[in-house]
Length: 167
Image (cartoon, rainbow, N blue to C red; front, side, top):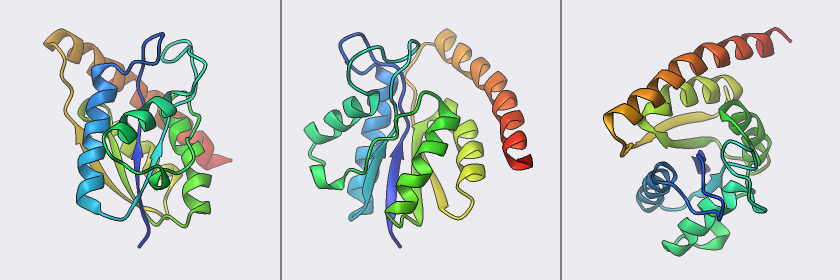
């Protein structure tokens, strides 16, 4: 079964430097890559005022981090130039399908996994999805804000998924 690790992006700084959340996701993806053996990696993240206003897509910064950690260039699939979680799944789908990927290891942060899994299961119903959570290193207040955002975002994304299913 052809497998791919899908690494979801998060904000970077104005120079493309990855913040701790993105680094923890990359580290988790690296761990999964070493564990899985022969598989591909799909990094997500394009551009957006709220997370990446540089000239390169965010997914490129994720790839660069993983390349510098020893992942060979030929292991990477095309970057999904997404701006948010639902777009991560929608834009990843044609890349995964065109590469005959039947199994995905979805890598994102622990606080974000519930929503990411909901979205990816809906958008990719014919692909087996396993989850791999990166631990979020944040203060209690920061983590509380991230979790509160996810509660609202799960409601919003659930409504969008229902509308997509109706079309």
